[in-house]
Length: 60
Figure 1 (tube, rainbow, N blue to C red):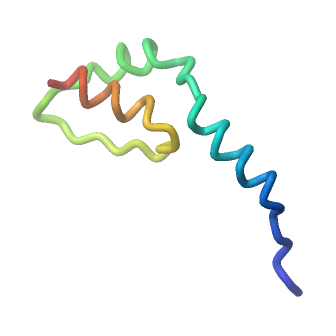
Figure 2 (cartoon, helix red, strand yellow):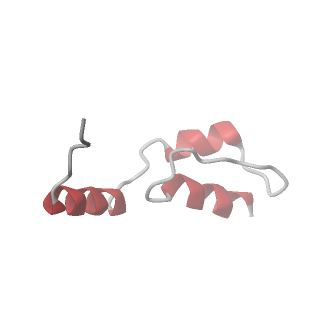
Figure 3 (spheres, one colour):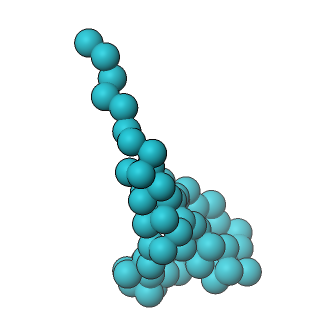
């Protein structure tokens, strides 16, 4: 069985969508995690970096 190929247009759309992603639950996530500089966080959703960037900025 061969793996289906993705068209170039679909690939470009995905990249554009990732660049325009806005983390809609950002405030709730930051309130729940209460980021600190001494803590370790793993962002398994890393794509556009919205959550990762906010965690790093908030933690100081």
